[in-house]
Image (cartoon, rainbow, N blue to C red):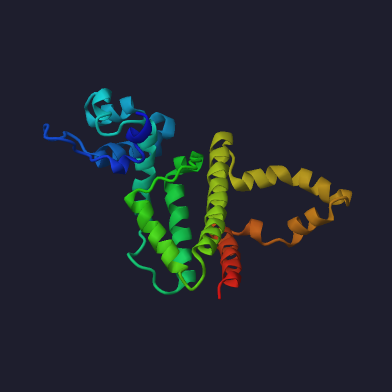
Length: 238
């Protein structure tokens, strides 16, 4: 389509149009099938052909419900946001509310690692994203301009996404190599000792000898960094 007819959002197009026969499937069924496949075999496996086979129909028939691959991805991403389990309204404790968002988002990404490969600058305002947006901005509605809310929430989201992408990539590398983190550290020990003995890297020595963070669990590391991000947000609030 072109010009004014161009579709802006899959949610701007009614799922059932006109008076034709009742649809055999729903967008939710198609979306849920796509998510099941992506969780099991990766996002690339979630093709219309594979989804149609999962549902027992022909691939072309699904385009009546989901016109494009981008539409399917928008639906999938918005659907998994349901798992964030965010209340209808902020609690009045902005720090607790943002912690809830961050930790829920981390769990959601770890359940659906295909999310880590998505770099989608175009905002898709599906119902679950809008619900999360209302909650997050409402939590920070404490007398600061909305532009400040944007910046602070972007900082929070950037931290969460960076850390969880790293967790997902680390897990993928460990699976592919067949190593455990403990085995990797053991194999790295001789080279690390060589670096320490050289005396050329004093800050690296401090990291190896003094740092507690690398020895924490992933959950503890995430919360340690999250608390520092929230401290920075607190410093920007009245």
